Structures are given as C-alpha cells and as structure tokens.
Image 1 (cartoon, one colour):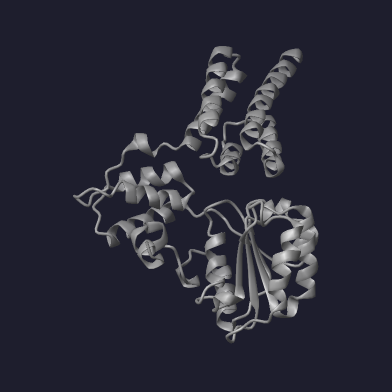
Image 2: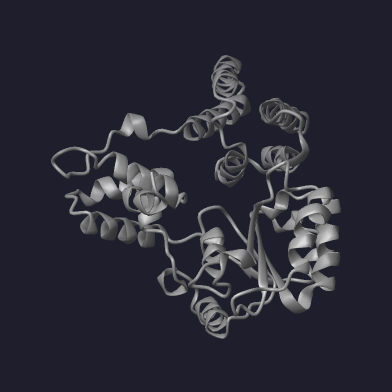
Length: 334
C-alpha cells in the first residue's frame, strides 16, 4: 500500500496534525513554534512529558516541508530506544558524518530528530552534546522523552526545553466527535466518552478503536466493551487488586492476582508496552507511596534490563514485599 493510501485509510494517519496550527498547544508554545517555522530556524529542542501529549507530532512537523527543514536529505530521524541507535558508536559512525555535510536546497540547517531520547546510553548522550557544540552553526537537534531525569544535565543545558501536558479529556472527546462527523459515522456521545476515558491519554489507541468499532456497513459506532480492554488495562486492574488485597491481609486474593499477572506477562511478553504500563501503575491514585517507590525503581531499571518481563515481575514481588513490611511496621507500633 502506498504511503498516501495508508494515510487516507488509517484514521491515526489521516487526522495526524501536519502543521503547527493544527496542534492543540498552550498559546505561548503556539506563538514560538509558529515563529520557528516562519523564520526557517529553530534552536536545539527538548520536548518532554507523558505519552500522548504531542511531543513526537510537533517534532515531525518541524522536520517536514511544513516546518523548518523542507528537504528530506537535511533530516535524520532516529528512535533512541533502538539498540542499533542508542550507543556511542552510532553517534560517531552515523550522526557525525551526517552533520559534516552542509544543508542542501535552501534550508538554513540540517536537523537530527531523536525520539525516545531517554533510552540513549549516557555515553551516547555526552557524545551528542560534544558534537552539538562542534557543529552548531549548521545543525540542530530535537529530542523527545517521557523522563527528563534520564537526560544528562550537561545535554539538557544545550537545549531549549518545552514541557508537554496531558490534553483535557473533553478536548479529546470533541476531537473524536469531529473525526466521526467527518467520516459520516453516527454515534452516541456516551460511547465516544467511554472509549476516551478507558484509553485516555493514548490518542492513537482511541482513534484506532473508533475506526475499528465504526467499520460496519451501517456507518455507526458500535462499541464492543470486551474487545476494548487492553492487556495493559487488565494488568493495571489486577495490580490494583493485588496491592489492595495484600494490604488487607487477603493472601488468597493476592496470590490469585499474582497468578493472573504472571500468566499475562508470560503469554504476551512481546505485545506489552512495559514502559507505558509503569507510568499507568505509578499514576494510580489508590496505590500507596511505598509501592510507587518500587514501580519507579523498576521503571528506571527497564532501560538497561536483560528481560523486560522479568524486570516487571520483579517489581510485582517487591511491591508485595513493601506492602507486607509496611503492614508489619504499623502492627508493631500499635
């Protein structure tokens, strides 16, 4: 399928913003970003914040014909989480040679866009800082990340930082209604709100689900709630129940939840987005701080672990241990 056909068939591509003006951004950001595009010039940038907030989308716009670099030969796009791209060898072997050649076709600078830059090794990050200084006159970088704490301060100091916040649920609901109207799909507002609230803040998954549930011949949104439940959502629910039952001393229920979690992880290891899952578990309101400490610790270790599934299960068992230790401490003080 050609790229243009794909863009027209998949709603996530068809309705992806392609200009700064199409983004939902704070007024201050919108003004600055429009100025960058107008001048065809941009400082090296660091976009950080939770998934689904538009970091990657605006970076792609800057690296497109609607942004500051209009020729593809002047753009290098990389995924920092790829093992092939995240080490110091790739910086010296691929990125630096790209920077040595001046921009072509009237562009003022060349642009290197590194998505998920919080996965870069420390050595690679420090090497990037050095070549950013060396080649700054004719080159710029854009980094996106979820965890700014994983970007070395020495590299942060060379970047203009923008923090992205989650879009309000109502904004996403209105966006979805607009998409459905453009696609001539009939719908109940309650069904749209259900999908958004269940999959929030992942706009890509929300649009995918809208399209999947609107694929019938009658052009109507029909929500299948059973098929909407993702593996990550199941794990999140089981984790919540596990922590609650462990805190109440219900060993049977706790063991049951651990078994369910283990089975999902074992059977679907390569389908799970562990990184997103850690963020979801950390944000759960009912999870106590001493458990969130474990979630945070294993989320940080995910970057360099040998087995993401074993790392995640290690977090599960240490979370249970932290609940038991806290309960014992409370009992001893009575």
